[in-house]
Amino acid sequence: MIIKAHIYVLIASILVAGSFIASAKLAVLIDPFSLIFLRFIISIIVLAPFIIRKKDFISKIKHSFFRALIISLFYSSFFILMFKALQSTSALNTGTLYTLVPLLTAVLYIIFFKEKITIKQYFIYFMGILGTCGVIFKGNFNLLLTFTLNNGDYIFLIALVFMSFYSISMKLFYKNDDTLVLVFCTLLGGAIWTGLSVLFLDIKLEWHLVQNEYIFYMLYLAIAATLFTTYFYQKATILIGPKSVMSYIYLNPALVVFLSFIYEQNLISLEVFISILVSALATIVLQFSLHKQR
Image (cartoon, helix red, strand yellow):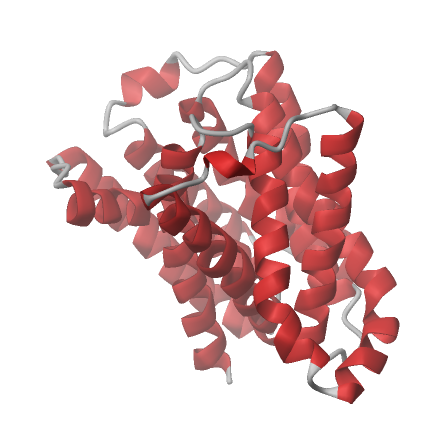
């Protein structure tokens, strides 16, 4: 079961990496808030038939919904604040700050589950951050040294706290739920929260603009990068815990680089390749360290 959990997270990480490419295609088409809302709506429509056809699933929704509503609040808040932050900061800055999520999750894990972080693990977290930043900054660490925070970055730091709470809450609020039902309720909650945001901010949906090849990108975001990843992360978090799941974040930039190489023939420099190896090594060593601690 432990190996299966790591396979779940690895598949989810690959799907998430692909979502960055798909999101880049769609970002110029419709408002990001409308995009997030549509992601949740499509994923709910796809999953709903599998839920409705089983009577026991309907009764289980009552058992899971309100806890899933809290989980989805953290999940959707991350996306909302991320897009809000990107209005006044760069993707480079957000990518750099995102490397803090595994460490933030580990700190929250201490608070909620009374589990300590060893000195060795702190060092591995640092190596993971360093390797991931090497990928983000394309091996030019002079750019990293000139990195400064702006208003958008402070908003994104709050978003990172929500992402860490999202990971913790998947384990904290799990009460022997059926995973598929819990995923459905989480997606439903995400649609409620993002729908309220769209309504409150008076944002035009403009979903009719999603045509031709953009339909494929939208389906990928909704089904692969939202529905499947939510399911895989939920299953894995129960089995191996939030710290192990979130540590795979160090691989995300590397996976984006590899997918860009495969689909867009973007070359990988030696410096970036070395940084990818450092990120991968940090993730693997951290997994072994966390496994021994369990």
